[in-house]
Image 1 (tube, rainbow, N blue to C red):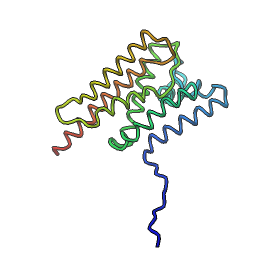
Image 2: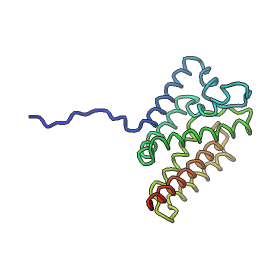
Image 3: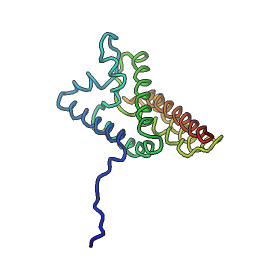
Image 4: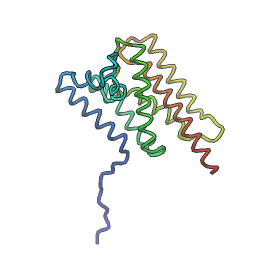
Length: 197
């Protein structure tokens, strides 16, 4: 008798994998429509409040990407960090992190940068990076990894904002990192409090 086990695929991280597939699908559709899909549904910019798509784009802009390099840069990090976070915190909380990061970055761009079209998952990437630094916190202690990640990350973003002229939205990165930090603190705090019940 053979004791060999059959290998099978495991959909181990449903939110992260679904997010990844959606990002790829959006860019494929965008390629076939010469940019119309992304500009219409998957990027945020100043538009009329009477237009229902204005509200939709506040969330969907994180699924849109300018090109394949932009997509691969973001998705690689999300696939590395995301599944670990989803396993630790659960799918629902990861969806919340993604949605709130999208909303915060979308609203700030909408109101303060009316002539800029924001798209891409880089805000989500940085939310995950800062959130991941909280994964091994102990009660009453701030992890040194969080301080180092925050210093390196914030320093890099400030440097690029002032000295490197590119199309990367450093503010979206900083806001995403802020959302990840807040979620990391709150989720770990609630976990510690629940130990006493």
